[in-house]
Image (cartoon, rainbow, N blue to C red; front, side, top):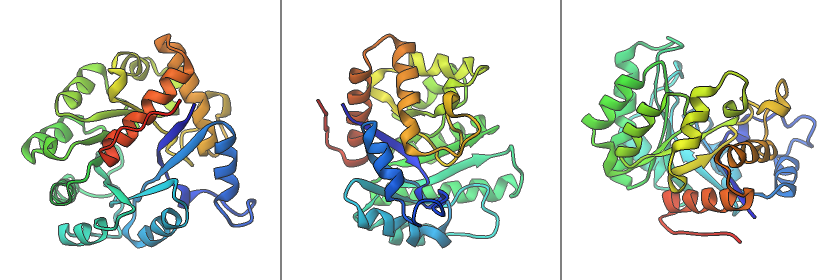
Length: 262
């Protein structure tokens, strides 16, 4: 059995008690069958940190993107294409729209989102999309920019099942985080239960959003086991089946090659 943390921020983990190395986090994750990690970029300034970690370990992939709430930076489509051409970069993002925090006006966020979609199309690499309090505009822009031509994943999905179906209809995968274990997360649980198993990913979004059993602690990839076990039980499928299918889904989306672990 093997699991993939399809969305984590390894460069944002607190390494001070871990010999200033990400390796102890990786080793803890591997002990609970998490063997591959997508280190997601949210700041162009820190992209080199994200990339260096991926270059050091064959089981870590990277993305390049600028989070919709990052107000002190900008990036062009051409810059994204240049950075995203690296062989270790498997996706463009984290990108999208976030109207919950209004650090940037909506128009600026939307233009930034369009640049990411167009870069992904040029590179033929999938998108990692963040949406919060902005699902209507997010889906509309995905249609307008023909995001289905490159595909991708709706990361840390918290919208309802009707919205999930619209994203699925565009060919996107749905990724579920530890939020699914929270007491009042009935909407997320419905999506986790109903999304076709071959279109589902799981993630920690570490160091954020630790799952129920670890609430109050900084999240880390090893905690993915709790989310996986929770959703497998919710769907009434064996944990091994769930783990192997979501692993296969990850490699199908981000490398174009199926890779089933048994």
